[in-house]
Each structure stands twice: as structure tokens, then as C-alpha cells.
Length: 187
Length: 187
Image (cartoon, rainbow over the protein chains, first blue to last red):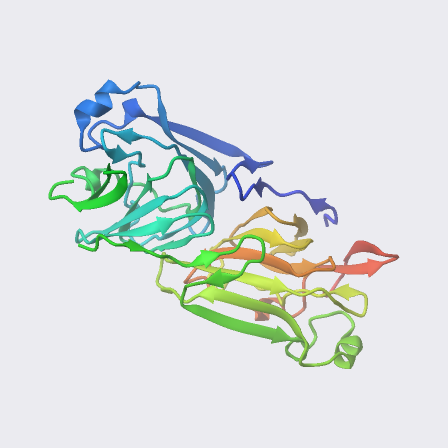
């Protein structure tokens, strides 16, 4: 029997930094996001190497029933007038949900059902987002600092990006120094 | 299409208080914890109405794949020399895991497999605990303030208390002003 007191991984609530765990990291750059933003010409004029978001996650079991924990850091910026955002995805296992917690910065969580109904939740330090199954999700940074969010999701959920190849039904732009959400037909 | 910005529920990281959500609350008192502590006589001499821990959770869907979010507030105290703790449980759906995040206070998370192997992880503000499937879990407050922890778990996980009727294999006591973990045969 192990009677020692084990030091677990840690998260810094103010920054979302993960420590003392087996970590996986992935950066997504402007050059990785072809056809994700409304203004593809504007995207091509930005530096391709610029990081739009970083994801750090604990490298734990992907077995049925196990939960993953990770943090997304979405940087401030725009492609044309459209705010930086994650690619967004459905889960490959459609019934699997997810929970997001806002840690710092300000933004929006775009949720969309398979029937194409979309809605936006405010993201800020301490916000809690219960993402149901069968619901695609995308983070949008509408602020001027890093938007960091903690996520917990099932290891078996997987990702399905192809189902959103035509994009989400709402896009979020800066217009007249205000955050504006617009319905779009084909994403 | 709903283009408004929806206000989500919130959690206060410093206290674990949940707000603006559909909440369920449950208090567990000394009188509810028969035979949970080593010294049953000492338990019976405490005020039965005294709350040992409160759980608040968001009242969301329990369907397969959906995740629950809740906070446990475990108060400081002892039954005899044994620190206040939660009853602890396996999930009824044994393969289902859980994630705990320490928010305030200091304590231990006791984990035990179905084979009876137990271990202890330190709980503190920012600690992250990946609880695998097939693993019972119990919080123990070894400090002098409230121990609050945020949890995310699958809605279909359920609880199985009966499998631990003989208790966990480790108990944690205060002895000589120190936190002492001891292996026990029958819990």
C-alpha cells in the first residue's frame, strides 16, 4: 500500500498554465486555417506562422469512460474584421458532451446543433459551459488579451471537422468598435 | 437564429460558489454517516445535525455522453482523531471516470481500485485529479478551513456505495499534530 501523499498535476486559474503532468501540446497557426474565416484573402495576407491558438492537455487514458483535461489559449486578433477563433468541431461520437470553464480574457462560445441551430455564450473568468452531445463548439476571442478556457471531455469523444466544412451558421465580427454576431447562410 | 450573448452559469474559483445555473444541493450530516468513520462511538457523540459536506451541482442532462459539473464543500473537523471525509463511492458504471479540481483548503483524495489498491493525492487550490474508471474516490479534509473541489463526471456514471461497505483500505488521522495515513484491514 502506498501511504505517501502524491503530488498531482496543477492548473493556474489566472493563466490556465498546466504543470507537473504528462502534457501534450499543439499549436494551430494562420496557415492551418484555410477557409475557416470569411475573408480568405485577408487570411492569406497574414503571417502563416502566427499562432492563433495553443492547446495543452494532460496525456491520460483515452479508454471508454475516461475524461481528458486540457486548456485552450486563443490569442487576440482578427482576420479582416472577424475575430480569431478555433476551428470548432463536432465530436466523432456525437452523443459525447464537454464542459468548458472560462479562465481569463473575454470571448464567446459558439454552439451549433446538427440541425444548424446556433447560439453564443459569453466566456469570461469563471464562466461554466455545459456543452451537450450532438453540439459543435468553437471559441471566439472578442477581447484584447488571451482567452484561456479549461475543458473536460470524454477520451472516446474524438473530433469530426468534416461535418462543419461549410462552417457555422453564425460569424462574429468587429464593426464600429463593437462585437457583432451575424447569421450566415453557408458559413 | 439567436444572436444574443447568453449569460452562462459561473463558478467562483476562490470559494467554489456556483451561480446563475439550475442548481441541485445536498447536505450530508454526521447522522447520515453511520459506520463510515473508524470510531463509531465518537461519531454518535457529535451533534447529528452537523453538516460534514455540501454538494452543489448544475441540474443538467443525465443522458449517455453528457457531463455533470458540481462542487463539494467538505468542512474541517474530526470524528475522534479521523478527519472529516466524504462517504466515497465507485461509479455504478465502473468504467466511468471523473476529474476533480482543488479550489480552496487542503486535503487528500483517496483513490482505491476494485482490487483494493489505494493511494492518496494532495488536494489544494489548483490541484488536478484524473480519477480513472474502476476507481473509488473519497475526499478528506486535513486542514482547518473548508476544502472545496470542483468535479466533472459523466451523467450516466451513477454511484455504488455498497461495494465499499467494508470501507477503504487507508484511513487518515491526526496524530501528534501531524497528518498520518494508515493501512487498515477491513476499513
